Length: 297
Image 1 (cartoon, rainbow, N blue to C red):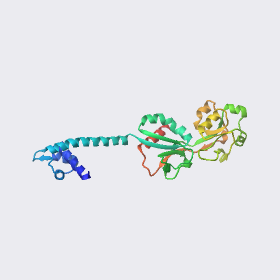
Image 2: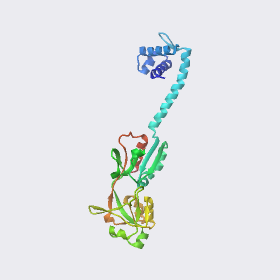
Image 3: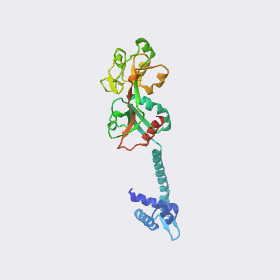
Image 4: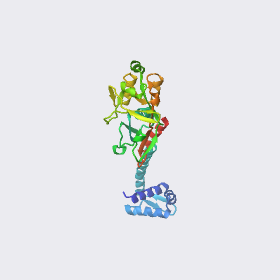
Protein backbone atom coordinates (compact mmCIF):
# COMPACT_ATOMS: atom_id res chain seq x y z
CA UNK A 1 0.00 0.00 0.00
CA UNK A 2 1.31 3.40 -1.00
CA UNK A 3 1.43 6.23 1.51
CA UNK A 4 -1.26 8.18 -0.35
CA UNK A 5 -3.64 5.21 -0.19
CA UNK A 6 -3.13 4.90 3.55
CA UNK A 7 -3.77 8.63 3.99
CA UNK A 8 -6.97 8.35 1.93
CA UNK A 9 -8.21 5.48 4.12
CA UNK A 10 -7.45 7.50 7.25
CA UNK A 11 -9.44 10.39 5.77
CA UNK A 12 -12.43 8.13 5.04
CA UNK A 13 -12.23 6.66 8.56
CA UNK A 14 -12.28 10.14 10.11
CA UNK A 15 -15.35 11.18 8.09
CA UNK A 16 -17.16 7.93 8.88
CA UNK A 17 -16.46 8.38 12.62
CA UNK A 18 -17.56 12.02 12.69
CA UNK A 19 -20.42 11.70 10.17
CA UNK A 20 -19.45 15.23 9.24
CA UNK A 21 -16.89 16.61 6.79
CA UNK A 22 -16.17 19.78 8.73
CA UNK A 23 -15.42 18.02 12.03
CA UNK A 24 -13.36 15.37 10.27
CA UNK A 25 -11.41 18.00 8.35
CA UNK A 26 -10.67 19.87 11.60
CA UNK A 27 -9.38 16.70 13.28
CA UNK A 28 -7.11 15.99 10.30
CA UNK A 29 -5.91 19.58 9.97
CA UNK A 30 -7.14 20.04 6.41
CA UNK A 31 -9.92 22.05 4.76
CA UNK A 32 -13.35 20.48 4.12
CA UNK A 33 -12.91 20.95 0.39
CA UNK A 34 -9.54 19.18 0.41
CA UNK A 35 -11.02 16.34 2.44
CA UNK A 36 -13.93 16.05 0.04
CA UNK A 37 -11.50 15.76 -2.86
CA UNK A 38 -9.55 13.07 -0.99
CA UNK A 39 -12.70 10.98 -0.48
CA UNK A 40 -13.62 11.44 -4.14
CA UNK A 41 -10.16 10.20 -5.21
CA UNK A 42 -10.49 7.18 -2.90
CA UNK A 43 -13.90 6.26 -4.29
CA UNK A 44 -12.70 6.64 -7.87
CA UNK A 45 -9.66 4.50 -7.16
CA UNK A 46 -11.76 1.75 -5.56
CA UNK A 47 -14.53 2.05 -8.14
CA UNK A 48 -17.25 2.13 -5.51
CA UNK A 49 -19.16 4.82 -3.61
CA UNK A 50 -18.41 4.83 0.13
CA UNK A 51 -20.39 7.83 1.37
CA UNK A 52 -23.79 9.36 0.67
CA UNK A 53 -23.56 13.12 0.87
CA UNK A 54 -26.27 15.73 1.22
CA UNK A 55 -25.97 19.38 2.13
CA UNK A 56 -26.78 18.54 5.76
CA UNK A 57 -25.58 15.01 6.44
CA UNK A 58 -23.14 12.26 5.55
CA UNK A 59 -23.93 8.55 5.73
CA UNK A 60 -22.09 5.41 4.68
CA UNK A 61 -23.14 3.16 1.87
CA UNK A 62 -23.15 -0.60 2.40
CA UNK A 63 -19.65 -0.76 0.95
CA UNK A 64 -18.59 2.12 3.18
CA UNK A 65 -19.93 0.38 6.28
CA UNK A 66 -18.07 -2.80 5.35
CA UNK A 67 -14.81 -0.89 4.84
CA UNK A 68 -15.32 1.09 8.05
CA UNK A 69 -15.77 -2.11 10.09
CA UNK A 70 -12.53 -3.56 8.71
CA UNK A 71 -10.64 -0.32 9.24
CA UNK A 72 -11.78 -0.18 12.88
CA UNK A 73 -9.95 -3.45 13.54
CA UNK A 74 -6.89 -2.50 11.46
CA UNK A 75 -6.42 0.95 13.00
CA UNK A 76 -7.03 -0.43 16.51
CA UNK A 77 -4.27 -3.01 15.94
CA UNK A 78 -2.00 -0.32 14.55
CA UNK A 79 -2.59 1.93 17.55
CA UNK A 80 -1.85 -0.99 19.88
CA UNK A 81 1.38 -1.74 18.03
CA UNK A 82 2.50 1.88 18.28
CA UNK A 83 1.62 1.92 21.97
CA UNK A 84 3.82 -1.13 22.50
CA UNK A 85 6.69 0.72 20.84
CA UNK A 86 6.10 3.63 23.21
CA UNK A 87 6.46 1.22 26.10
CA UNK A 88 9.85 0.16 24.74
CA UNK A 89 10.83 3.82 24.55
CA UNK A 90 9.53 4.74 27.99
CA UNK A 91 10.55 1.51 29.76
CA UNK A 92 14.27 0.68 29.39
CA UNK A 93 14.68 -2.62 27.58
CA UNK A 94 16.94 -4.55 25.25
CA UNK A 95 20.41 -6.09 25.56
CA UNK A 96 23.19 -4.14 27.27
CA UNK A 97 26.77 -5.41 26.87
CA UNK A 98 29.29 -4.13 29.43
CA UNK A 99 33.01 -4.89 29.73
CA UNK A 100 34.92 -4.31 32.97
CA UNK A 101 38.03 -5.56 34.76
CA UNK A 102 37.29 -7.95 37.55
CA UNK A 103 37.98 -5.50 40.37
CA UNK A 104 35.51 -3.02 38.83
CA UNK A 105 32.98 -5.77 38.24
CA UNK A 106 33.17 -6.74 41.91
CA UNK A 107 33.09 -3.22 43.34
CA UNK A 108 30.89 -1.22 40.97
CA UNK A 109 28.60 -3.66 39.15
CA UNK A 110 27.99 -6.64 41.42
CA UNK A 111 26.53 -4.55 44.29
CA UNK A 112 23.88 -2.93 42.06
CA UNK A 113 22.77 -6.09 40.23
CA UNK A 114 19.96 -7.19 42.60
CA UNK A 115 18.14 -3.86 42.61
CA UNK A 116 18.90 -3.14 38.94
CA UNK A 117 17.52 -6.46 37.70
CA UNK A 118 14.44 -6.01 39.85
CA UNK A 119 13.86 -2.46 38.62
CA UNK A 120 14.52 -3.22 34.93
CA UNK A 121 13.37 -6.76 34.13
CA UNK A 122 13.26 -5.99 30.39
CA UNK A 123 16.99 -5.29 30.21
CA UNK A 124 19.21 -8.25 29.39
CA UNK A 125 22.67 -7.63 30.84
CA UNK A 126 25.72 -9.27 29.27
CA UNK A 127 28.69 -8.66 31.57
CA UNK A 128 32.19 -9.58 30.40
CA UNK A 129 35.11 -9.58 32.81
CA UNK A 130 38.26 -8.50 30.98
CA UNK A 131 41.37 -7.05 32.61
CA UNK A 132 43.02 -6.18 29.29
CA UNK A 133 42.46 -3.05 27.23
CA UNK A 134 39.50 -3.57 24.90
CA UNK A 135 38.28 -1.88 21.73
CA UNK A 136 34.65 -1.74 22.81
CA UNK A 137 33.43 -0.67 19.38
CA UNK A 138 35.14 -3.56 17.58
CA UNK A 139 34.05 -6.00 20.28
CA UNK A 140 30.43 -4.85 20.19
CA UNK A 141 30.18 -3.52 23.74
CA UNK A 142 27.79 -0.70 24.61
CA UNK A 143 30.06 0.60 27.37
CA UNK A 144 32.99 -0.37 29.56
CA UNK A 145 34.62 0.48 32.86
CA UNK A 146 38.37 1.12 32.95
CA UNK A 147 40.95 3.23 34.69
CA UNK A 148 41.16 6.68 33.15
CA UNK A 149 44.58 6.02 31.65
CA UNK A 150 43.24 3.14 29.54
CA UNK A 151 40.20 4.83 27.97
CA UNK A 152 40.19 4.98 24.18
CA UNK A 153 39.85 8.22 22.23
CA UNK A 154 36.50 9.57 21.04
CA UNK A 155 34.71 8.29 24.12
CA UNK A 156 32.39 9.96 26.60
CA UNK A 157 33.68 9.13 30.08
CA UNK A 158 31.86 9.39 33.41
CA UNK A 159 33.92 9.25 36.61
CA UNK A 160 32.82 6.52 39.02
CA UNK A 161 35.39 7.03 41.78
CA UNK A 162 37.67 9.63 43.19
CA UNK A 163 41.41 8.83 43.15
CA UNK A 164 42.05 5.80 45.36
CA UNK A 165 45.03 4.48 47.33
CA UNK A 166 46.90 1.22 46.75
CA UNK A 167 48.56 -0.37 49.77
CA UNK A 168 50.28 -3.63 50.65
CA UNK A 169 48.43 -5.88 53.10
CA UNK A 170 48.92 -9.18 54.88
CA UNK A 171 47.12 -11.24 57.51
CA UNK A 172 48.15 -11.29 61.19
CA UNK A 173 48.89 -15.01 60.71
CA UNK A 174 51.45 -14.31 57.99
CA UNK A 175 53.04 -11.43 59.87
CA UNK A 176 53.41 -13.57 62.98
CA UNK A 177 55.44 -16.10 60.99
CA UNK A 178 57.45 -13.80 58.71
CA UNK A 179 57.36 -10.33 60.25
CA UNK A 180 56.44 -7.08 58.50
CA UNK A 181 58.58 -5.40 55.83
CA UNK A 182 59.70 -1.91 56.79
CA UNK A 183 60.68 -0.83 53.29
CA UNK A 184 59.36 -1.86 49.86
CA UNK A 185 62.68 -3.47 48.93
CA UNK A 186 62.23 -5.88 51.86
CA UNK A 187 59.27 -7.38 50.00
CA UNK A 188 61.85 -9.25 47.94
CA UNK A 189 62.51 -11.36 51.03
CA UNK A 190 58.82 -12.16 51.49
CA UNK A 191 56.26 -14.43 49.88
CA UNK A 192 54.02 -12.21 47.77
CA UNK A 193 50.80 -13.13 45.98
CA UNK A 194 51.36 -12.00 42.42
CA UNK A 195 48.69 -11.06 39.91
CA UNK A 196 48.75 -11.32 36.12
CA UNK A 197 46.24 -9.60 33.85
CA UNK A 198 44.49 -11.98 31.49
CA UNK A 199 46.18 -11.99 28.11
CA UNK A 200 49.45 -10.54 29.41
CA UNK A 201 52.72 -12.40 29.87
CA UNK A 202 54.27 -10.24 32.56
CA UNK A 203 53.22 -9.95 36.19
CA UNK A 204 51.62 -6.85 37.64
CA UNK A 205 54.31 -4.56 39.03
CA UNK A 206 53.60 -3.19 42.50
CA UNK A 207 53.64 0.57 42.73
CA UNK A 208 54.97 2.61 45.59
CA UNK A 209 55.71 6.26 46.18
CA UNK A 210 58.37 7.92 48.30
CA UNK A 211 57.32 11.52 48.62
CA UNK A 212 56.71 12.76 45.09
CA UNK A 213 58.68 9.99 43.37
CA UNK A 214 56.73 6.89 42.28
CA UNK A 215 58.47 3.63 41.49
CA UNK A 216 57.61 0.04 40.63
CA UNK A 217 58.80 -3.21 42.15
CA UNK A 218 58.68 -6.75 40.77
CA UNK A 219 58.03 -8.96 43.79
CA UNK A 220 58.45 -12.70 44.18
CA UNK A 221 56.30 -15.49 45.54
CA UNK A 222 55.08 -19.02 44.95
CA UNK A 223 51.53 -18.01 44.02
CA UNK A 224 50.46 -16.22 40.84
CA UNK A 225 46.78 -15.66 40.10
CA UNK A 226 44.73 -13.96 37.38
CA UNK A 227 41.76 -13.49 39.71
CA UNK A 228 42.18 -10.46 41.95
CA UNK A 229 39.58 -11.77 44.40
CA UNK A 230 41.68 -14.92 44.83
CA UNK A 231 44.74 -12.74 45.50
CA UNK A 232 42.88 -10.91 48.26
CA UNK A 233 41.51 -14.07 49.82
CA UNK A 234 44.96 -15.66 49.69
CA UNK A 235 46.32 -12.75 51.69
CA UNK A 236 43.47 -13.13 54.22
CA UNK A 237 44.32 -16.84 54.47
CA UNK A 238 47.95 -16.07 55.32
CA UNK A 239 49.52 -17.20 52.05
CA UNK A 240 51.45 -14.00 51.51
CA UNK A 241 51.44 -10.25 51.03
CA UNK A 242 49.43 -8.62 48.27
CA UNK A 243 48.43 -5.13 47.19
CA UNK A 244 44.88 -3.85 47.11
CA UNK A 245 42.87 -0.64 47.06
CA UNK A 246 42.59 0.61 50.63
CA UNK A 247 39.10 2.08 50.26
CA UNK A 248 37.72 -1.28 49.08
CA UNK A 249 38.99 -3.40 51.96
CA UNK A 250 37.90 -1.18 54.83
CA UNK A 251 35.94 -4.04 56.41
CA UNK A 252 38.94 -6.41 56.36
CA UNK A 253 41.18 -3.72 57.82
CA UNK A 254 38.66 -2.76 60.50
CA UNK A 255 38.01 -6.33 61.64
CA UNK A 256 41.70 -7.21 61.68
CA UNK A 257 41.66 -9.83 58.93
CA UNK A 258 44.25 -7.74 57.11
CA UNK A 259 46.96 -5.40 58.32
CA UNK A 260 48.16 -2.44 56.22
CA UNK A 261 51.87 -2.41 55.42
CA UNK A 262 54.29 0.25 54.18
CA UNK A 263 51.64 2.94 54.52
CA UNK A 264 54.14 5.76 54.08
CA UNK A 265 54.86 4.31 50.63
CA UNK A 266 51.22 3.95 49.64
CA UNK A 267 50.57 5.18 46.11
CA UNK A 268 47.63 6.99 44.53
CA UNK A 269 45.50 4.78 42.30
CA UNK A 270 43.73 6.29 39.25
CA UNK A 271 39.98 6.84 39.11
CA UNK A 272 37.64 4.42 37.37
CA UNK A 273 35.39 5.63 34.57
CA UNK A 274 32.45 4.24 32.68
CA UNK A 275 32.76 5.20 29.03
CA UNK A 276 30.90 4.72 25.75
CA UNK A 277 31.34 5.86 22.12
CA UNK A 278 30.64 9.54 21.57
CA UNK A 279 29.12 8.92 18.13
CA UNK A 280 26.51 6.44 19.37
CA UNK A 281 23.13 7.47 20.73
CA UNK A 282 22.73 6.39 24.33
CA UNK A 283 20.05 3.73 24.72
CA UNK A 284 17.46 3.84 27.48
CA UNK A 285 19.07 0.68 28.90
CA UNK A 286 22.47 2.37 29.19
CA UNK A 287 20.86 5.47 30.70
CA UNK A 288 19.25 3.29 33.36
CA UNK A 289 22.55 1.51 34.05
CA UNK A 290 24.45 4.78 34.43
CA UNK A 291 21.75 6.07 36.75
CA UNK A 292 22.07 2.99 38.93
CA UNK A 293 25.86 3.33 39.12
CA UNK A 294 25.64 7.01 40.04
CA UNK A 295 23.05 6.34 42.74
CA UNK A 296 25.28 3.70 44.30
CA UNK A 297 28.55 5.65 44.05
